[in-house]
Amino acid sequence: MSAVSDIRTMLHMLRGMPRSGDVAARLQEFYAPQADAYDDFRERLLKGRRELIDQLDLPERARIVELGAGTGRNLDHFGARLTQFESFELVDLCPALLAEARKRAAIRPNVRVVEADATIYRPQTPVDCVIFSYSLTMMSEWRAALDNAVAMLKPQGQLAVIDFTTSPQQGWLARAFWRSWFAHDGVHLDQRHTAALRALCSQHSFEERRTPIPYLPGLRVRFYLFIGQPLAA
Image (cartoon, rainbow, N blue to C red; front, side, top):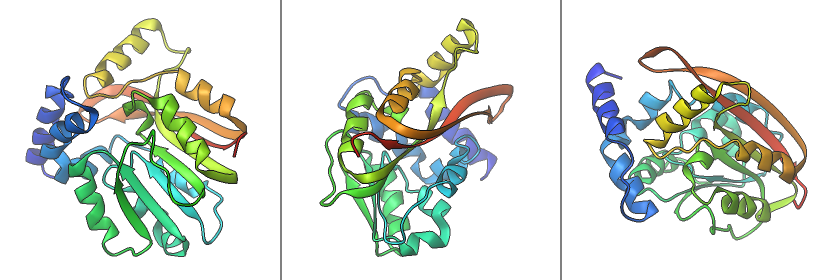
């Protein structure tokens, strides 16, 4: 990625998420100008995705849904395993990001790109795994999205989530800073997310890490990796 492209992306991020319009319109206005550079820039921030995917124990003919899939970057993290799956559905509301996802899906016949709301979209048949990859914090109706994800899972299906968070181990000032900093771009850090995930899943793994912020030396934000089997699945 060039410095010019980085600057252009950061300028759009500095303008922040629009406050007017419906969810899809706001996402489109925010992401359309940076969609072509989205993956390159955020690759340095959205850490741990490949590690989360490597931990998934999926059957050979698995059906997978990713809610808030954006550009479909996680398809690349599955590598050769992707060809073994029965289906992989990428669900998002932002046309600009889904346009990038369709480019990735074009050479993968088992991948389907769907423009839909994560709180109400349901695949035709139950699935083996639902993934939220740095998307749950962008959903105002996050609890409804989680409930919908659980409802579409097969028995013993897996719920996999990776996202930013804050921690009680941080001081109140640090927590307030990160919540405000991310909220500017429509990302809402909420400790209730991890509490809800633990409550939903009888068996789960959870790991919390920290990652640096591009162009902000010394600052490290917390994120977590979660894989669980929901009680209702």
